[in-house]
Length: 65
Image 1 (tube, one colour):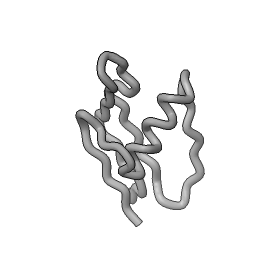
Image 2: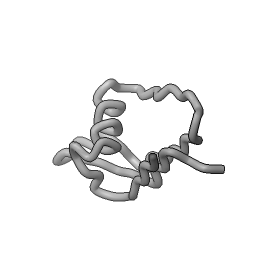
Image 3: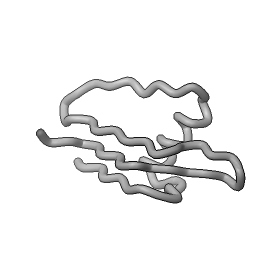
């Protein structure tokens, strides 16, 4: 299966605040998905990492076109 987005074990922290902890997501091409999070800041942090506005402290991401 071709994935347009692969997020593997991504973690991001800001000082002592841990926004993301070992997040993994695979999104198939031509699919529709919804991103849920307990806090808006967690969802925003993941989106900012995917768009390379900020970089994760740990893990990797692959965004295909």
